[in-house]
Image (cartoon, rainbow, N blue to C red):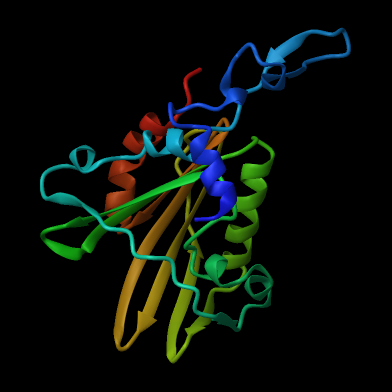
Length: 223
């Protein structure tokens, strides 16, 4: 764990940071030239975000939390998509966004691996969140097909922009097709920004559509 992550969690053991204090001057910004002040929601820390993640009981009977695998640092190379090559391997596979305040949970279903679903929560300013997610989604859908190589493994990727539900403040959605070793899987990835929180749900298209409302309601900051 990086020093930044340790400091973030240490200052957030009770689910808030000093910046979350509504009386803190850092929580306010000038609303107009007349000197009126309006509250600006402070970014949530990782510990606070983790409390807003879905849990197995939210998904229904048969689901269990999937243990997180240790982070791997294999070199990932993008082949056939210059826009993604500039962003790096994590962006190419849609696996992570570069925001320090984040939380993630993955769930598996006893009935089969095709019922897995994962959720990611990120928090930052309402200006930075759409820039970060929009840059990656735009790059991915700009290349309908490309390849991702990690070591001796080559994965064929396909991306297709899909209509996002009219939820939150901003929305993005796409279908990702993974092909490797003669096997093919389709994953839907939908991102919704609501205030200073970004919710990303990934999994089979039906599961994402079913649980998106619940994930958004649980992650949405108090207004």
